[in-house]
Length: 234
Image (cartoon, rainbow, N blue to C red; front, side, top):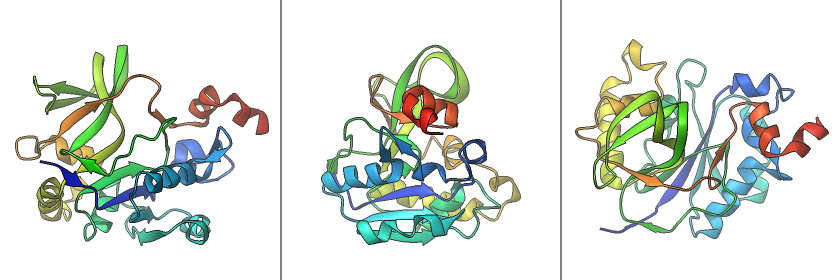
């Protein structure tokens, strides 16, 4: 079954403390890679793919992102819990607009536009690690459905980049999140950790991408390795 993408939600609420400590306090999504602001590039790619409904979930330094409304047709959602919760708070803040939705992170860079207007089902983008990795590694069945997730591993496909939830997945996940949101142990969890606990009812494939298609910058050192000119400017 093919799903027409309704919208995209870009999570940009976090403190990104490892990064901002090195970047002079600039939010990670607003730094430049290869001469382009990360968020601006990602928004342009979504628009070029025909996805006109784009939401930015903001929290930390929300005022820094206000200028984006002057140049792009984006909408803002404010995550009031960004200081107290991990990114499950951003998913909860966007719960009323989640349908057939891309869920993106502000710190990703795609050399080529990977977004599409129509998709066949829910997936998490994945790239392959040769050797040891500390990333979230995937166990897959013969059809590439995710059957297990472990933090760290070797010679494995791992979660990296954007996600697509079809409307059924969104409904199932939000039902679980609303049931567990008030629990103290849920506060520090990534939404992926909540997903990991419910693989039996939250069916999602890994969409495999070759090396060099998706980049993620956890630290300034990661960005400098990708774009040496960034560190020269610093």
